[in-house]
Image 1 (cartoon, chains in turn orange, cyan):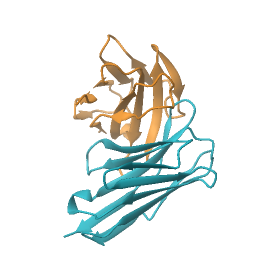
Image 2 (cartoon, chains in turn brown, orange):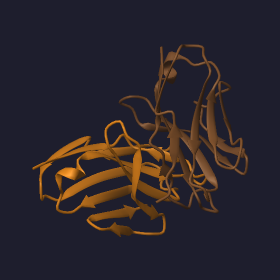
Image 3 (cartoon, helix red, strand yellow):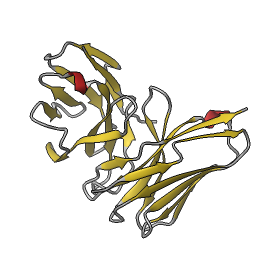
Image 4 (cartoon, chains in turn cyan, purple):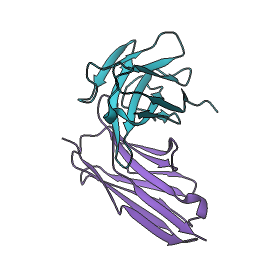
Length: 116
Length: 111
């Protein structure tokens, strides 16, 4: 069964460093998402991406964050200068609907980011 | 602003009992509602999706209902098993596809 994959599973970085989290969505999907979950808190939406551009972004997704689909398979989240409060589990998700809201979102296993 | 609430926060039942998990949302203008399962330190597994026009969705031992006008959804798990122990999350979708999650109900099924 097709699944969303994410690498690395765990990333440790120093405050101020840049990190890139990688995702491979399900191959025929059209919509891509990043969410994050700080330990003990709700899963929060960061950004949605369709047709090579951002569809919507949350207040969390400031200028320190960027997303890219560099080729036909990968979807990346870059944090330019990490802060302690960026420590969280980051989830990538994808859906195949022709309408953004219409279909099931499938989640990857997550990347645990630890900022020291 | 949409708020999603799940009650109870935690639930412990003996094996074989039916589970009832509740989810409420403040803005009824949703496109669909999705129930997920999350195991400790793991990703989210989609269980059921209910479109806003539907009242109910079933998959095996799982049944989810949706009352959009009153802002409520209920997930029923019949004949619970120890393997059902996990955190169950509900999330509502807006017109852009953004999921907004509740805090979850942590379920423990004891043998």
